[in-house]
Image (tube, rainbow over all chains, first blue to last red):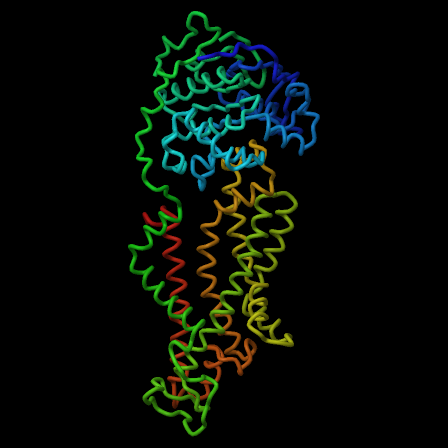
Length: 234
Length: 318
């Protein structure tokens, strides 16, 4: 197996803040958060529920706009791009893994994995090859035709990982990817994530509040009440 | 599967990388992949086909639809070929229901009457399903001002009684074809589907797969059409099935009142209108088309019930 040592910075966040609501109902979900992630690096963001992990990941992935601060994806400032350009960046450069898997119920495992390639207008023959390879990489080669509700939680999350990686993104964002899994399955999924991130040189940010998953991280950032309070070294 | 003690960087590694032999993902791959994939509709079909009510409604609907498409399969008699010599005549060979006051064959008119009712019912249902789904989906998915404006328009139309509004509009109509009647019924009958669609879209749009589609770089319109609507379709289909029966009754009501299809068009409502003057001496003139109408509506309502139960597992348990 080959591993890619962290080298160049792929994702940078500078003084990110996000405020929801106004006046008396104002909630500061994230305050002045900065971080950097290099290619092939697995950064874990940990913290209790409500600490701002999902808000941070949404801002890093362009799913939400910060109240202040900036996000850089390589040399382009994601937060300065228009909606269409952000859409293109999400489509071509970022992969997501969700806590509840986020699989489309009416599509099979293979069709779910195929979605990012369809959006990128990849030719059908190449799509089929890449979907088969992605499912094989997560150990689900024999489950291409199954729909999400026919798969176990761990299997669904592996389909989610295959979907996130099939288009070979530079950045992988995973929001509590093991939050709905039992500890054994969670370990399998986390090991798989760590392996593909390191093998493929993807810059990954994974949020969790499970302290047992820290062992797989290259670096750990701790969030409390929307503020970065600790930068460990995994 | 590695335990936590082993899940540490090994010599020569900067970070922990699980070797493939430790990641025994196939351990949880116990599902039989040779089985054909299932789906919501396949599950629904499995549920429906074991219910006598489904087969009863299917037979009723199949008969009515066949009669409306190829009525000559059921009778060689022309329903508009009337002979006053046969006025109120008793049933005879080849004329099993007898004759009405104009000497027309009641059986032939009952068979041919299905055509107008089914045509208006299907057209009106298609129109309300398209209009109601578009309005409800846009209101529910985009929210904000779209929702406020479209929901208030829906409320205004919802407050107007369907048949009353149709009577007013039809009394002003220059022509009274099946298309006109269906359009008028659809104009005031789309609100329920819009409300149902809006509710279904509101519950589906916050699912994580919608956020996932957005994260994958899919546009809002594409997410609505490709992911939200297909996953909101079950209640829309159930309501449309029941609505078809409702629109058939509405058409018959308008024709009975003399403001639906013209009396020259063979329809159950029109025949009920003509038969009411002879109800004391020849009630069968009304009984046959009324029974056909009732059985048709019953068929669609029963089918709607069965489809609803099949698509809603919670309803099945009740």
